[in-house]
Image 1 (tube, rainbow, N blue to C red):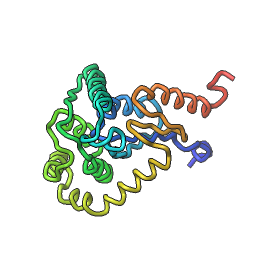
Image 2: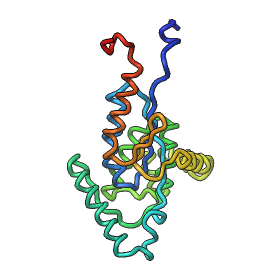
Image 3: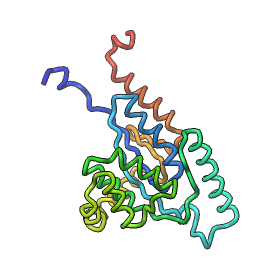
Image 4: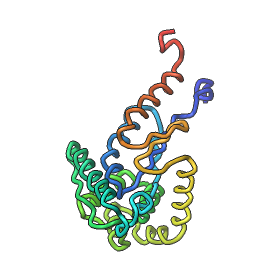
Length: 216
């Protein structure tokens, strides 16, 4: 290793928290992935499985106001999806989503996360995949080249506490919703904050640049 390599600072890292049942996480996925293409950084995807009832209450207890918020959220997300050529159909019911989050962790461990990530979002939002159904998720994993039996063992065994620990760590960092980016301890919640995250990344890269490259 050269002296220059030894003195080089560690690569920048962005934590990206997502949930496959979130329409806003779906429409922000492409812009989030673009960060790793635009800058020399490590983009680390992590699941943050939303507990819907904590945000909008149970279906039975929702007020007219809460239902108005729900309808607007899906209408707004659909507009953003249409701009990207994505299909976003309103969900058929309330989904838990933990199994899809476990699938993310399994796909990362087994090396097929990019395909899993895109396909899970796309299939769920066009009503082609029930992310809470083990049989369908096994078939989904298998179609992407993963080991369905190994996935089920993971999702019913060691993956459960691993997922729980990641969610608890996220909340300790201040995460409360998705999509959320965390960069150098700063939180950026929502797809409309990705540009602010870009600015923070560019400022951090500028601060790392040699003085000569900044015109000093």
